[in-house]
Image (cartoon, rainbow, N blue to C red; front, side, top):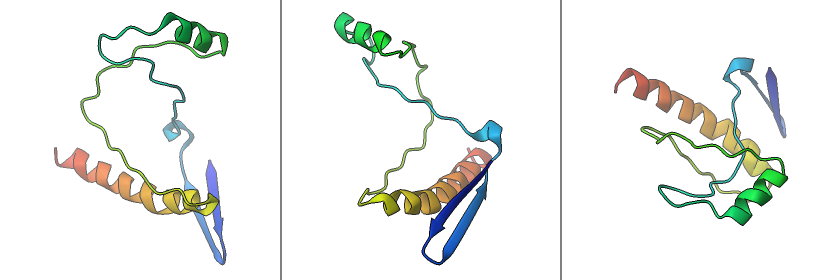
Length: 95
């Protein structure tokens, strides 16, 4: 899949293999041993969401980037993704 980001006078294209594109959208309804409120669970199911339990996270990489306007998203993708990707590659090779 080709993803093209257009900036004024600059074009950036990333080649991302289809099998590497992953995402998950949802809401965390409870953590630990806390039960999900039945009313909230019923509403989420009625809206088409599925309820699942996620495994405990052993390692993760998290980042944030200030959102000022729509261009912020493009700049974040252009600057943050490559740096995160490099950090993960280095970390995997040097545990």
